[in-house]
Image (cartoon, rainbow, N blue to C red):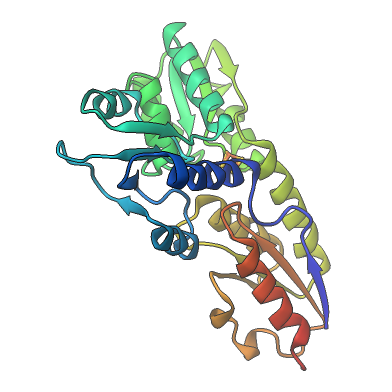
Amino acid sequence: MDVILAKHAGYCYGVERALKIAKEAIANCPKPIVTLGPIIHNPQVVNWLEELGIHAVDEISEKQKGTVIIRSHGIDPEIVKKFVSQGLEVIDATCPFVKKAQSRAQQLTKEGYSVVIIGERNHPEVIGILAYAQHKAQVIEKVEDIEKLSEKLTKRLGVVVQTTQSKENLGKIVGELSTKAIELKVFNTICNATQKSQADAKDIARKTDVVLVVGGKNSANTSRLAKICKQINSKTYHIETVKEIKKNMLNGVKRVGITAGASTADWILKDILTYVEDLEI
Ligand code: SF4
């Protein structure tokens, strides 16, 4: 069976950077070390960090001691101030691309625009960006959401985008917003890694019989890759580990495409690649 592995699959720059920062913290920072929420959206990697002594927690109490790592998705700056004031060492692993989206949202708010964030309302990255827009921005996920918001939007609109959104969704929403606004300022804050991996994923979805998209089920960018591939190739499967591959997924298949989200570890990807290459079908 032929296997095509996407060129841009697996750890992106921001995730590699966050993991490097976390590993350095183990050697250099006061213990215990925690992250508020998983440092990246990949359960297998989070378990591995747990073994190294970095614990993902859902909340941080006023009695917490040691170090808190701000994960790649970023966080409300007021929460960071609170951590500092209670004496915690704060290590910021926010991805620079996320920081760019945060600062653009802050800029648009200061300039008096009605800010629109295109993204998933409950995703931690979007919640963080919203804080930089002083919690005044409107969050929309799809073009149909615009109608519901019309009364809240002024004629001066400023747009930023969750870093892992698709260019197609951005294009559709901006097209519709342009019919509502007199002035429209758009910052395309989709990150380079996302744009490259989505372009690669489309390419392999067209060239193969089955696509395996590897990554956390809670990972926004992996889920988006799976959605993009499925629109092109209905035989697309989103899996986290090799255990989820069933033989009937690959029955009669000549060519398999494999891609992975930005938070998928190399070892998970390698396991899957080896398994599929060794399959005798
Ligand atoms: S997907 Fe993009 S924004 Fe998110 S961590 Fe990776 S490089 Fe940063």
